[in-house]
Amino acid sequence: MRFSLRTLLIVVSVLGVIAALAGNKYRSRHRAYSIIESHNATIAGDDNEGALNTSIRALLPRELTDRVDRFRVRGEPLRGELLWAVRQFREVQEVIIVDTHVRAKDCMAVSHLPNVQKVSLHGCTMEPGCVVALCRNQSLQDLGLTFTNTIDSDCEHIARCKSITRLCLSGTMVTDVGLRAIAALPALSFLFISTDEITPAGVEAVIARHPTLVVHCYGPKRFEDDWARRIEQRYPRCKIHR
Image (cartoon, rainbow, N blue to C red):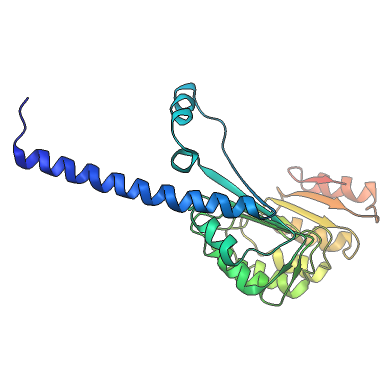
């Protein structure tokens, strides 16, 4: 098969563009890896690759082959050069921030990451506006705010993020008032709560709106077995774990 000079020039040009893009991606991600490794942060991807893909990846640098799904940082906020580094991995779907002070500005940056569907803040002190910023991401499916200073008014903002299916509020100051607010979430399937500030009536208010809900209750105050059995009899597809 013969190709004209024009066709060959087009092919060479296209290959040149691809090579340039790959070079830019390599340099950006190489720097991003270095920044992340210099902080108290980690990234992880899906290691479930086929044998052929694994063989190919072994021959190429990680900057061009790795798919990074999850980012985790402990003891420092996601901002500055660390935020820039995470943005180089557009495929990131999960962000975990542990034991640090979090600003609304930081949470807004997280919500703007293009493919994030799961965000977890654990043991963090949040400034006002953090929950509002996180819930601007209408693709968010899994929100964890465990052992944070989340309060009832935050639940009103969570209720506006209609995409949430899994919500973790263990170790927070949320009461029955907040539970009634999140009952408005149309797709809620899993709820994790602490029993310190809530009552069985508050939990039941959520279950009444979501009869197939799976509820995990943690904390020193143990709900009565008779109450749990009664709820599961009334809502046979509901599961309560204590």
